[in-house]
Length: 151
Image (spheres, rainbow, N blue to C red):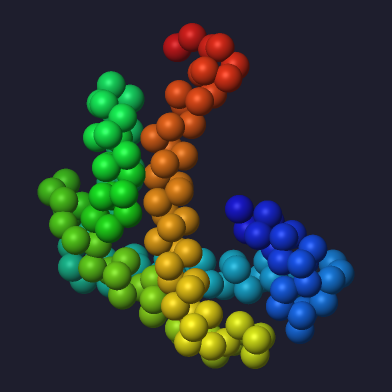
């Protein structure tokens, strides 16, 4: 995903400070990588304090009705599991996602280092996780339907 977003940013020359060339592509990719890495470290560190267990990821259940599957995609964006596998609010994610995006204003290009841009990156961060959950939930079905594979 990082290569894709860096490529789109380079094609659009956004932010302009990096330029529309390979060096700009590298700067954009590096910026995304530092943001993702910082956010992951923050979420893991804070999650450990509250007993959030990162081993519990997204669990797909293809036999559930579509409505329940869609609900799970959204719900699990904002929920984590504790050390016993019980669901709990993803407190670490609630702090790490905006915290990382506002912190990264300190090393971003000036045109991206605004509170409005950080808030928008925060929204996109949660939307991206929801998209990842949706992909995990539905891609096996789409792949089977498109390529007519039998499990």
